[in-house]
Image (cartoon, rainbow, N blue to C red; front, side):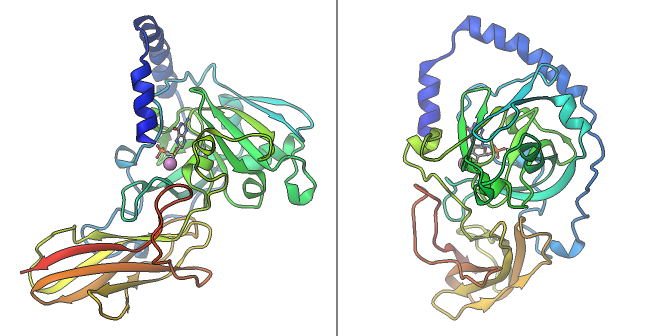
Length: 355
Ligand SMILES: Nc1nc2c(c(=O)[nH]1)N[C@H]1C(S)=C(S)[C@@H](COP(=O)(O)O)O[C@H]1N2
Ligand SMILES: [Mo]
């Protein structure tokens, strides 16, 4: 994905294009500053204090916007003016084509949900995962209003193609968007309008699916179609058509090649399996037995779960390995898979030297 972004850079953008973009950018910045997000009709419950593992160095439960990973092909981050922004909804099974304004969306009952977003190009143990408190419009309601039915209820379209102002396309199963999960057209992230980097004014967020098949930023068009009829951007580049999130766990602390002192060392991290939840996390020291970690309280099945493990560490070099069990009882596979086509798998390990 990074290589593809490089190609965009090489293509270049002319000086006139940049000047026009700068003018549009000022209008967009002003429009973002003018946004007053309404209170949610359906607020997210507070994150329970017990959802935070008592271990310094673990990823914060809610990822601050400034630290939230960014993955996209945009060389220049699109600056969209919320005042002139429109979302078109059309395609197969849409009884009545609709166009929504930003004001329309804000006037609807909004829901607020904690959802962990993960990228298919995240290596095992990698940084492309984050949890935010999203505020948005339930996407299934908009679809139902336009007459859309999921395939299980006889609808003709099985793929929802989202298009962004910069021409990115992402294809999401209509069934997933309409199965009752909190698929959102998000307008807020952690209490503020979406940052430009994360899709202002509106983006999609669908729990349980990797970002490239669900999380269109700077969205402006939704088309109902079929997987047979259309391949979205990354699918054309050999990534999978459908990509539910794989169960993963990560050791945040100690860091690789850390040199902790012998005695009790707190090992801690996060584990995620959006839609299924996390039931158990285990840690293995070298080739020893799997030992159960202490799980922090769950927030929802769509968020990661923090864990910690008090390790009695003996001097010398040691490898720590983690694995999770999801809410269905399935144990995270040790089978290594690369990120392409549908997400990395395998166990995360960290080597440390206890002194
Ligand atoms: N318009 C647009 N939306 C996009 C992308 C993109 O390149 N362009 N990347 C997707 C991918 S691969 C991921 S993982 C998420 C990342 O969202 P974030 O940058 O807010 O973390 O956005 C998705 N939405
Ligand atoms: Mo991604």
